[in-house]
Length: 202
Image (tube, rainbow, N blue to C red; front, side, top):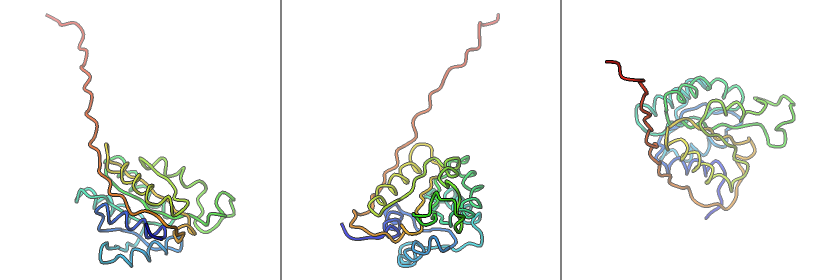
C-alpha cells in the first residue's frame, strides 16, 4: 500500500497485465496520464499517432497480430468520436482493445457549458461501442476498476472496453493497493441446437 495517483495506478495495472505498448495522442485532458507513461518508459512504450482513429486502429491491429491487449489513449469528445470506428471494428472482430480517455473537470460535468471537448454523457456513447465501460472517480477506485476492465476485455468473448477519467481525477492521489494481475477465463462452450429437418421422406 502506498500513495499513488490515478495515472500511476493505471500504468501499473497495464504493466502488471503484460501491456508493453500504448498508442495515442497527448491532450490537455490526459497530460497527467502521458506524464506517467513517460515515467514508465523503461517498462512501457508510448507510440504517438497523428489521428485518434489511427491510435485506435493501431491498438486493434496490435491486439489481432500479437494476441495481447491493444491499448490506446485519446482525449474525450472529438477523440472518442474519431476512435469510434475502430472500437466498432474491434467489437465485431472480437479484439481485446482498451480505450483510456479523459473527460472535463468533475465539477463541470453535466452542466452543458460547452467546455473544451465536452461530450454530453460520454459514457452513453461508449456503451454502444464496448463490452464494458466505467469511470474512475477517485484514486481508491483505480486498481479495482482497471482489473475489472481487463477481466471483461480478455475473458469469454474478447471485445473492447473503455475507462474514463475526468481531467482533475488523473492527478487524484490516495493510499491504494497494488495492481491486480487478471487471469482471463475461457469462453463458455457453445450450445449446439440440433436442427429439426421434419419427417424423413422416403
